[in-house]
Amino acid sequence: MMNANYKKLSVMVLSGLLSLSVSTTVMAADAMDVNIEDCVRIALENNHTIKSAMADYDSAVWARHEARRYSGPSLSWTSAARRVGGASSAYDVNSLFLNTVSVSMPIYSGGQLEASMRAADLGLNASEISLEATKQAIKASTQAAYFNALNCRNMIKVSEDSVKTIEEHLKNVNAQYSVGTVAKTDVLASQVQLSNAQLKLVSAQNNYNIAISKLNNIIGLPADTKLNPKDELGYIPYEISLDECTQYARDNRPDILVADYQVKIAEEKKEIAGAGTKPKVQAEVSKTIVGEKPFGSDDEKNQYYFSQNSWYMGLGVSWNIFDNNVTQAKVNQSKAAIAKAKEAAQSTRETGDLEVRTAYLNLTSAAQSIDTAKVAVEKAKEDYKIAQVRYTAGVGTNLDVMDAEEKLTSAQSTYYNALYQYNSSKADLDRAMGIMVDTNIDKFKLSETKN
Image (cartoon, rainbow, N blue to C red; front, side, top):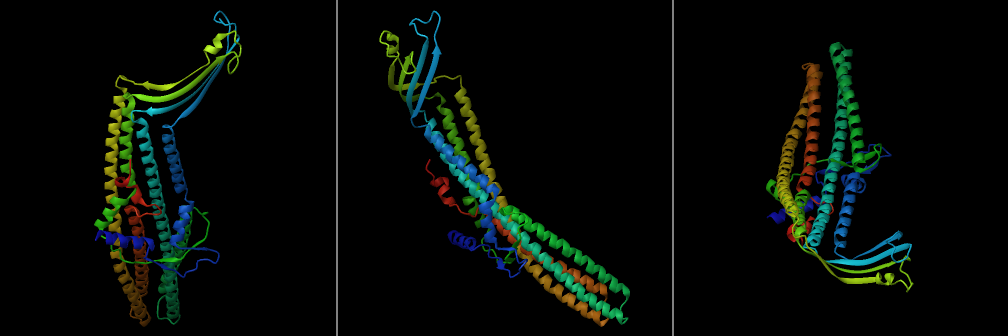
């Protein structure tokens, strides 16, 4: 059952946010037409936060490279030039040059190098998962900004309809006033209501412009770029249960996986610290040349130079048998770090559960509000028509019409806001669950990771 629902969830994700429908609205001739997939794609390409996370990933790649290079051979050259004089100049020379070339390679490090490489491997994986988490967050932010722009555009439509409705009613009021069937106060009250509606329209248009600017900022376009969103907010029921969403998040949320990796990295650092009192073995080949000339002397009268032209090869062993418990102190610090990482991982899981539950409850609440708000809009339309007819017939008041119009505008705004909340909660739920953007999280799960 769970696998079937995961497949269903994957289909929904691959097909995009299905609650959006295509809009035929054209905001401006020179505007760039975009849908939600376009905005997400542009954001993933341009967003600065994602680029910063990519730089962190590149750093982790080189950190892994560094950890692996320590286990290979290294070549060093040491050179010194000295001026010789005084009583110590036993060999009648004025200058002395020393050159040493050596090649060394670690044979046994007490597990330090191996643990460092494992920690670097884990760190690289954690960095790639963190990059995915950043992309998921930017995707959710882009979707939220896109939905906000759609909602602001809907508010413009509501305000435009309100202005148009009041203008039509004002014509009726003026006509009746001209024949003396209504008082001047009806005309004035309707004119005031029209002015208020026009101010709301100006505010709605400004809110839309701001929403587009914010969307441009998130997706990495200039703030004054003119966008024409092609979608409309819609509603399609969400069929995955809360328990299934929670379990999916526990298995796939990037921050949970990263927290588990941090525990493993802390454990490897404990191994690194424990290597402090273990023996170290390395192979070394070295050649040293000392002479009056930079690389020796051909003066056979002075055997000093030939005695200093030497080489050796072999193994070196070092063992810090007792370091006054410095290593043990480092091990104890590492144990505390492991405990801290485990607590952080558990906290991350609990936070994930809370975020999924919150987004899911917001989603279901918005879904319930949509149906109720839709019915309210129909009733408000009917009530307004009745109020108009009664006013025209002389059995209703102008106040009844204005009140009915305000209720209609409010009902329409509530309906569109419910659609906005539903789609935004759906995007937030996707992020809380860890719905993948472009990384296969399965290959990073620790049960399948070889340390």
